[in-house]
Amino acid sequence: MSTTIAKRKRAMKACIPCHQRKRKCDTVYPCGMCTTYGYNCRYTDENKRVSLDGESRLTSRATTDHNPSSRPHAEQDRREGEGSSNNSPVVAASASPGIFDAQKLRYSGASAAMAFPHILGVALGSDSPPKMRSFAYNFGIRPEEASHAHCFLGTFISEEDLGEFSAAFFSVFGPIGDMIDPRIYAQRCRDYYQNSGSNSVAFAAVAAGVAAVGSFLSPSRHPRESDLVQYAKAILDDPASMRWHGIDHIVAWGLRVFYLRATTRPSNAWIASCTQMHLCEAIGLHEEENVKKMASLAGAAALGHDADRLRRIFWISWAAHNMLSYEYDRSPVAFRTVTCQPIISIPGSVADQFVQLIQIIPSPNSPFQIELPHVTPSEKLLAHLKALDEFQVSHPFFVVTKAEIAFCFYRRLYQLKVRIPDDAVTLVIANGNSAIEAAQQQASEGRLFWNVIGSVFQYTCILLAIDAPPASAHIGAAFKGLENLVKAADTVLTREALSMARHLLSLNVAKKRRELAQLEAVEAGYEFFQTPPVSEANAAASDMDWAVDWDQFFIEPFSFMLGPDVQF
Image (tube, rainbow, N blue to C red; front, top):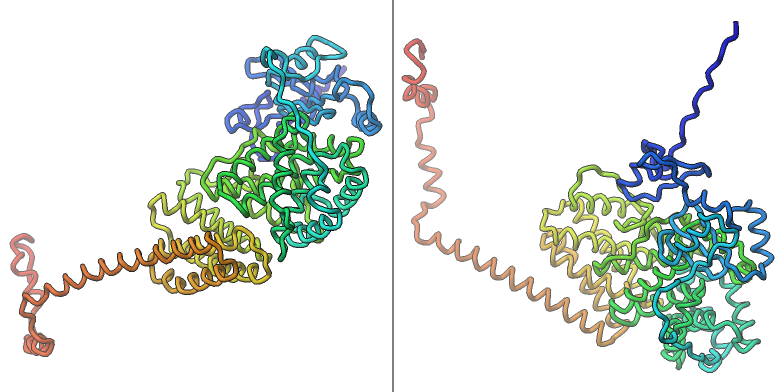
């Protein structure tokens, strides 16, 4: 007698987001969980998934059968490393929600109008699908903006001076904004000056940005610092930069963001950081698969664009943008999904701590999330404040930044008009006190970062807003710290900040005087009543007969309510 052994049906694997979050997945594409929460639904295999309408639907990975990027990674990496002379772009379609053109460093969402002819060509079985271009985007009846000719960077700064101010940049700010490898940067500078800047316009913007920030952080500024800033800006604003952007453009925009944050108004720095984040998406730097492809391109290593450096560029840019947005209560740029891996800790760099600190801010695409069901906005803010307090930092820049984030949380709680718990107030005050010490240390070393003066000024405002004895005890130290910073950099803006803090203090004093006058008026009203002296009141109390039957005194008048059967 033959026995038929039924094969065990293999369970369908959950999609990647559900697997990472340990959620129940219905294994369709897109699954219900990803649809509900807006996750990027994707699977690890290359099989078809059943769509919600019951029909078989190809994922974006399955559409790469006729695409060069669907070949094995070893073959693909070899071809990219050798550099193909074929004019058709190497377009990589994958489980990500977009398409990456490795030749032009261009990324587009898979549903974009410019990507659809390529998608359709693949679906129709073309061995050479259409390029990813903006077909029929407009009539083309006017020529595009012409690019401008940019002079040699050596016109503004010598190679020797560039080396000096670059060294200042890397020693002071390099460990925090670690987007550039110093060794490779130095080699690229030598190559640029030896070849008179030929074919290195974008890198010239990077070098000019490094020199400008280095000049700002140096005891003696370069005489043409403002010209360096405008030189880099002209390159970044050039129409060619928008048509042929690359990694150097993102780095140069990042340097511009830092310089603007230290020298100009909030809107200018924030708008520049928005541009930088949009460039990250335009290139596809937010997706890990694209990062690996960029790092494997021919010549990437010589430019310092290895995978870890590309991740640093993205996450540092993201952190700076989200800090700017949260500090001024503006909407940050949000990506549909971020799969870029976190940066690793390396000697001489503290950029990983900077990114982790900013990720505590409730912001789009942050890996740091607090799962609290059915919480109010104030409860969520308090939870993030507690998480911030648990994050330990020692670098003075981060001590000040941590205080700034705590102040951001407090201002939002203040606007919600809820009672702020005492322990939360204690955390804010503790961070503020630490910021005063760190800010004065930075100023004494000549490191006049933007948050040095801003954090102490905001702390004085928050102490006045708390308006309670625990805060009042620290107002004197806060004002003393602010005055010391004004002495370190006596400018119109620092004097204006000190003047405003003193004005707010005077308003607070006037408010307390009005409250005191109201209390004194109530106290003065006591004079209309004859209150016996304390000694007479005590004497009257001593004459009272304390041998009273208190049970009879309190109960007998109400005995009729208890009924006739109750005996006393």
